[in-house]
Structure formats: C-alpha cells, structure tokens
Image (cartoon, rainbow, N blue to C red; front, side, top):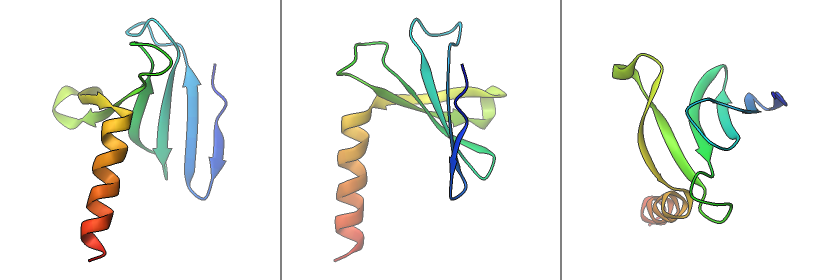
Length: 81
C-alpha cells in the first residue's frame, strides 16, 4: 500500500514490509528517505528509524517517536536562546 502523499517536497509512503509485523510509514524529502515510522510495540508506542548508509539501504538507530520529538524540541529551544 502506497499513499504517496506529497507536500512541499515531502512524500509519505505507507506499506507492508516483511521485516515488520505491522504497516510502516516512510517519510521522504525531495526523493530521499528521511525516516521510517513503525508501531511494532503498539499503537501508542510508535518508533522512528533512520537510514544507515553503511547498511546498503538498511536502517540504523530506532527510538521511540515521543523521545525523538522531545529531543527535537529541546534542540530547537537551545538553538533559539
């Protein structure tokens, strides 16, 4: 399943991947994969993974989306000081 929604350079693809039990979402910007979202640990525990160039198309670090959002918000807050 691929919804291919595009907005201002961003595209989201939702599909089934054999490496995951549930559907995943890929977020692309200008044709490049930025991150993958999954809900392998439940609907309330979405995780985000990032591409790892050393793994030939594979994914690297996987963290909870809530933790990633907190880290982004803290970085923006520090940047705006």
